Length: 357
Image 1 (spheres, rainbow, N blue to C red):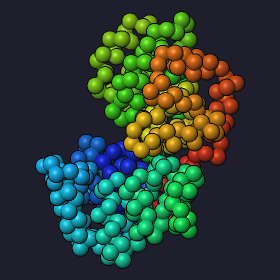
Image 2 (tube, rainbow, N blue to C red):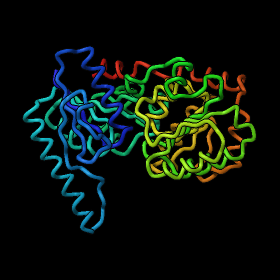
Image 3 (tube, helix red, strand yellow):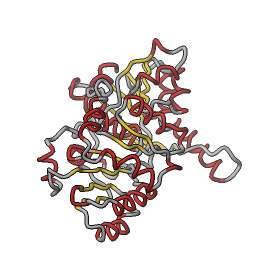
Image 4 (cartoon, rainbow, N blue to C red):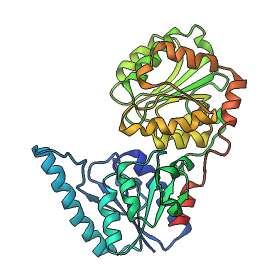
């Protein structure tokens, strides 16, 4: 079987695609897979990819008469010709798209060439590309049951698979995870994660919050701040008198998730899938733009009782005090929040998606 996989440039698209490819190849040794990515993407080394990759020139389309607008349209047209060559050389049996504009030429041309098509939606609220491509897809794989209502008239195509997470993400005993990070097992551990690029607002307000807490000896912090704020935050933490580990980026996230008692984070689809897998009590600050994808993702956890939401425009020291302080070492509330994850997570999402394909 030959499978053509198209992904966008962000981790929210690429990581599920890679997880799917790994699961597909694990269950089908003779499967041949080719990954199609935009030239500009978050991956820094091809060596980590489980299959060959081809790059296309697609970039976000700007509908105006500027040079940038005309260039973006030309690059989209060019990407269709690039994908035609890929089809001629690879001859896929199935094409699967993980959203974004990069999936458009792959899925549309697969439909044109009468190749079986599948799309996967990571978020609760489908993106524009996937809503359009749903008309040209044989199967629509979704991560949340709440997504079904956004594909009206296409319910028979829909398969609930969940959002594939990296196979390296496994649950680790807290004692082992804390030892790996050189932290103490008996302290309440807060994990702060603003996404792959970090978030300056979350970073700034959380440091203010830590400065306010009187009993810092009971706490420790794992803070993923992004490269932009790393130097500034390192100086801030040095004067706070709290046990902490500061990272611009952390690859083995399984240790951070397993060590944490509470997470404060954004609500990207991949982050939400990982939080669900580790059943972490959460205070979530959704990114306010991008068509409200993150808010809809976060609402699934809030309605279940697994998370609290702070709107981005309301993020402040006062709100963090109101939301976070009552949870610190409150084992009754934390246990209820962990228990609320029961039935939400789909840990075999990659295998389900591979079975669908």
